[in-house]
Length: 120
Ligand SMILES: [Zn+2]
Ligand SMILES: [Zn+2]
Image 1 (spheres, rainbow, N blue to C red):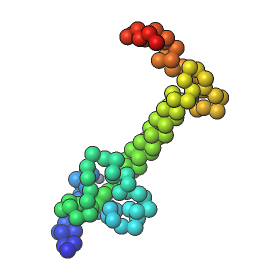
Image 2 (image 1 turned 120 degrees about the vertical axis):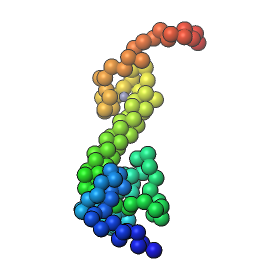
Image 3 (image 1 turned 45 degrees about the vertical axis):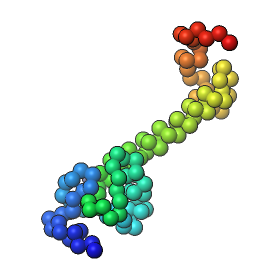
Image 4 (image 1 turned 90 degrees about the vertical axis):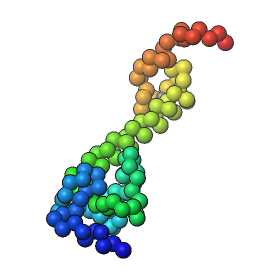
C-alpha cells in the first residue's frame, strides 16, 4: 500500500503534464482539498481514481492552469444560464433592464422570416 509513491526519487511526476517536479501537491492532501483540485480535475477529459495506478500529484504550473480553466468554465456556465433565461423569459424583445443581456442585439430574434417558412 502506497509504496509506489516513493518509487520516484528525483521528483514527483505530475499527473497532468508528466513532468518531474520537486514541488507538487498530492491530490488527496488537505491542501488539494482547499484548492478544490479534484473538483477541477473532473472538468478534464481524464478520470482520476484514488486507487488507479497513476500519479496522484500535480505540479504548481498545472494547478495554475487548472485554476484558470476552472474559472473560465464557471464563467461560461454562468453566462449560459443567463443566456438561457434571457431566451426563455425575455423572448420577443421583452428584456428587463435588470437582465445582464439587456440592450444586446440577438440576431435570431430580429429575424422574423424563418428560413423554413413555418406558418402557424
Ligand atoms: Zn504539471
Ligand atoms: Zn434578457
